[in-house]
Image (cartoon, rainbow over all chains, first blue to last red; front, side, top):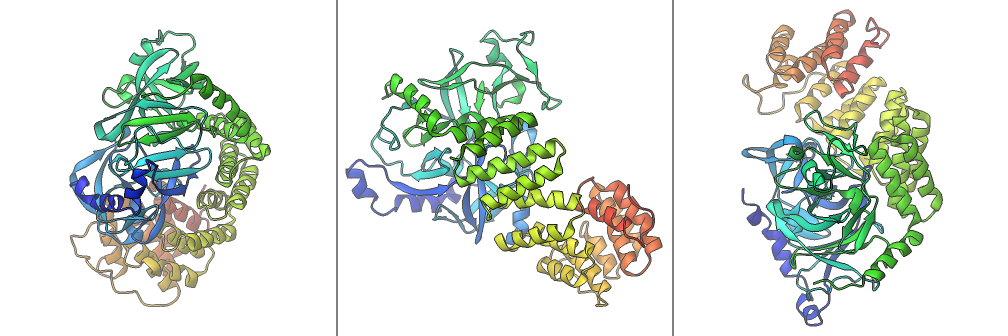
Length: 299
Length: 272
């Protein structure tokens, strides 16, 4: 499957947005859309999409790879399900082998076509599918979870001029797009710097045991408490971290679980889930490769 | 490039505390719920609601999560009230209806469950899961016509087709033609379709079910039991429902159906 080709509809739509050239001269942000967020019980969130004429709620998953669709929706849409030998591998070894092609798809009123989606049998209740970096990375993404708004912006803007919602200060962090289009930024946890992946598809935030070791934490640390929600294959601990710092915007008492190294994919040291990200207003400038951060309530 | 004044950012962080008290309390409540600390979750979610500054989506999720926390505490009555409050906060969101239906079904309040399924069907038409549940709930309520009407919506689906035939026989109607694309090689549940259509015997169908997978064993017993039941063989249906009850994964619609059929007055021994 060629995901880039399948996304051509979105790219065409984005580059033909009316008024964009004129706005560019004025060095203004061009907002394609702003949609309301629906919060899921665990704090993650969805945005409305229209697929094959059906209005659905898709989880925004910056930690995903490609778009997914709840498997039962394929029945509702009466679309053909295909099998692939090239499965999508998710967390904890889950593999998705079935996929379908959505001929009609729109996000925030913008049309796409021939979008391939893996079929997922394990979507959280309230989510009918997920949006992943394969689609998100073609926009700048504004996540204002406190006000319940999700904005799509043009990437064609003057560098650094995106924080429209406050004049009281912000942080602009360089971000690296690593495997799967995942967003990696540098954060400080209790004063020590780590590379962290931003994952809005994860409810919990995690730090590997080897990364925690660098903070002097070990399995013998008295403040380390073995959690009850651990998968048998992994150990999950709670630890009273004091502060997580985005180079000036701090989250105090972040809930960050210490986990076995093999629970996190690849070389990931820290994964920031929505439990922490909800406390911030984030603007992901995929084009500029910058993450703009303020406290959630900044205005 | 970093363009900010640290002092200003930290000031904004503290200023936000006053501007969004309810949001902060909501986030605390969600975190406690995710931790399984239900009493703490309820305290913070109650505070979030009382703060009075939540946007409608957050007010909905505060009530919804209160309901889930009360379920964690096995207090179905308060959970029901919380889900109803979530629906009142945002009547067009589906999640709270789904949660409330679970409680209605658990409490045997099938009329109320059906009303919520009908609301879900209005909010999101042509949803296989909702329509099938409407069909089954009408079946449990002894309304075969309404049941058939629901199952007919997805009659090209093999499971919906099977249920539709159950309702048809109960209504004295003939069995429909099979959905297309069924041959002797078509995997489960096609053997059940062929059994209902008269191409296979019950024993042949059950053998095919046993040779398929765990779901096939459960479903083979269930559909054989339903077939006997609508053909007035309650005594013969009973061991089949019992087998389905013991082989279907607990809490699934098939398990629930087997349980309800065993509990019918003319179906023999009650399910535990």
